[in-house]
Structures are given as C-alpha cells and as structure tokens.
Length: 77
Length: 142
Image (cartoon, rainbow over all chains, first blue to last red; front, top):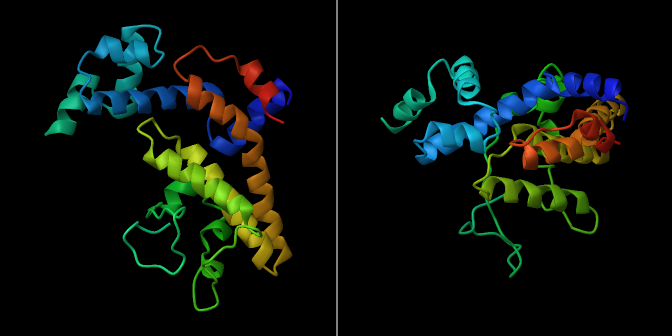
C-alpha cells in the first residue's frame, strides 16, 4: 500500500494516526510493567521505546493524569 | 469458549475450553456507529447452532486459537488485534447465516479493511519499543 493511502486507511480504521497508536501501545505496555512491580521508571521508559525519561514522564502524565510512580502506587493500594 | 471443567458433549483429548468476556462497545470502537456489529440476534436463540464443525468453519478455529493465545499471553495484548480477529469471525459467521445482503456487505467491508491492517498491527505489537519505519509498515499492508 502507498504511504499516503496507508496513513489514511490506518487513521480511518484505528481512529488515530500510526504515531499516536504506537505511543498508546508503549504507554499501555509501560503500565503493565509498572503494575508488575517494576519501580525503576527509567528502565521501564527505556524498555518500552521512549527516547528519554522526560519524554516518558510527559507522555505518561498526559495519558493517565498522574506520574508513573504515583500511578503504580495507586494500583497497589 | 467454555471453561475446562464445563460439561460438554464434544469431549476429546484435543479440546480446550476457555471463557472469554469481551465488551462489545469497547471492542468495536471506533466502529460502534455500525450497530450491525453489535446485533447478536444471529448468534443466540434456539435456532443458533453453537457447534461449529472444523471442515466448514476452519477460519473460526484459526481466530479462536489466536484469541486464546493472546488472552493467555502475559504480553501486552493489543485491543486492535483482538478486534481484528473478532470482526473477522463475526463477518465470516454473518456472511454464511444472514440473508440480508447489505448487512453482509457492510460487515465484510469492515473486516476486509481490518484484515489489510493485520500485518502492520502484528509488526507494531512485536516491535513497538523500536523505531518503527512507517514506510515499511505501509509496504507490509496488502
């Protein structure tokens, strides 16, 4: 499929673009790691493909409303 | 899919039974406007034959096995992958049962669209932590 057609097709089917989809997938995977008890946030960020820790913190907070460590604490309470 | 200790008539060494609970609204978003997909009338009631024979319904076995693998896996399961399998199953069942050709057409079109995205979605699921080349993803979509 051509790139332009693929982008449009992906957005029409998934309701978001490829980049947003991958980012949502990374956040979701990070949540699973944090829930499993991985408290090292930098390690979780690196393992799930975030280029920097600050990028991870920013994206995670935007998605969930809280920082990763706070989110993990809420899950265990 | 039914739990392993559930009594059933199709016992056999190779049978494996699991319950699966899927929220149809979440599952079919952003297709929820296509209410046809949420209409389960053809999948219930006394007229519904719930034993699918492998010879005639091989595609169901394929999708159910993949769903079982996904739900049993500890990896991050993509809602979109689950959705693609479910839509493919429902479209296949509907296309064999429904007499309403427009219903079949609508569901089949959606299933075809999702099927085209299946290779890129699988690739993302396996490589989401790496830098993903979108041009390569596009090449992988038929």
